[in-house]
View 1 (cartoon, one colour):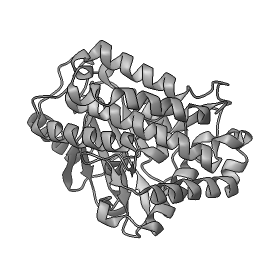
View 2 (cartoon, one colour):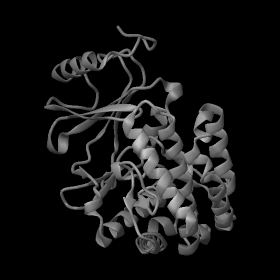
View 3 (cartoon, one colour):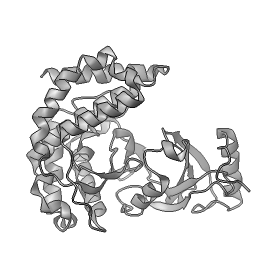
View 4 (cartoon, helix red, strand yellow):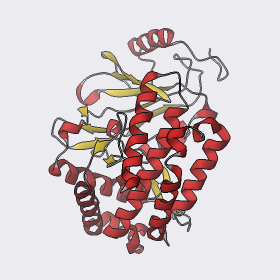
Length: 339
């Protein structure tokens, strides 16, 4: 038997264990069928098991629990609340290592389709994604009453971001690409701060609606995967990570100011008309879905997210792709802040 303190199996060993467990019917939440590696992320390695409607995704953590941005248990509880037509849903969770894999694991539904590409983006898809995000926020707003906490201002979030990186990777803040843009970055967050006044914290947002977490189904509808960063927060953040004027790496779509405005306006329109959001606590504060306030908060999160990602890329100097992505993000940020 494997104890919870046993070392994690190697990738090759884990793959063998997965095949043996599936063949023997010993893996919770899945049926026998073909096994395919889907990919390796920051925190998980994922496999697809089975075919068609019976296909499932097995996710095995690559990090120790204290290194995960969100616990497996917390993410699984979020997935239990995600409507199946909007994205991944919970199937089974094993939190210990006393199982045939010798590791904790999570099983979710499989979202068929392919990851969104820049060439897929058009006004029709933008409308569909904005509506999906609004529906998700409505679904995740249900449940116990949230705290009365308000969203921190853009300035507060900016300083919190810099403090964290200063403590954990101080060398990133002294990189010339960062020092050159920080003064203008701070000034822009100050300009956008009034849009954050009295905005309620939403019980749960996706937290990572980047291009790589949007899957286009065979029906052409966008659906969301990877709820690892889901937590309470500002709904505007989920509108900022898909793209905008600041891009770099594989995560963002180039979007003009008109594209961004149309995207935010559609989210606001649909949220106001949605019976789920009309009845939710989010709708009690009109500023939470007011188009102009949403747009300004979205703009702030674009700056917060992109700088955070720039610092992340700089913290991985030994990997060439991250150096290239850091250059792209820094150049794009400087261009945006120069306007």
